[in-house]
Length: 149
Image (tube, rainbow, N blue to C red; front, side):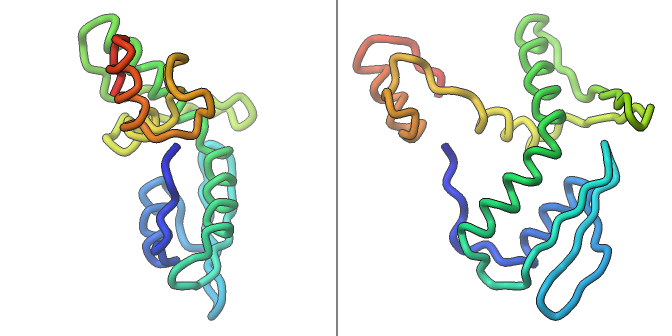
């Protein structure tokens, strides 16, 4: 599981969310309101702190992850197809029934990394499922199993 950064400020988080399609709707002295229209309208409010408290950041990221889970799932499926077919896939599309709109999703390096961060550790790994990837790879090598790191 990836650790959350302890030194991430609100300005840096806003920059990163703008890459996901969020835009600033309004800003006060204490908070920034962002909106993303696709696939469905989604709003998030970020306090203006430097750095953000770790619990606050976790709640914001969990809310955004629930909204953008489709992109990660589509990218994961495309990565499986790439491996099966031996050909690169650069984009895909998601059709949203409620809005009756088709949305193109580019498989960027950040999205592919998000897929890698979400993958489950192999079963011969640590039973707590909270160990780092480096630890899992070391356990697999000691037991003679293939390494996925």
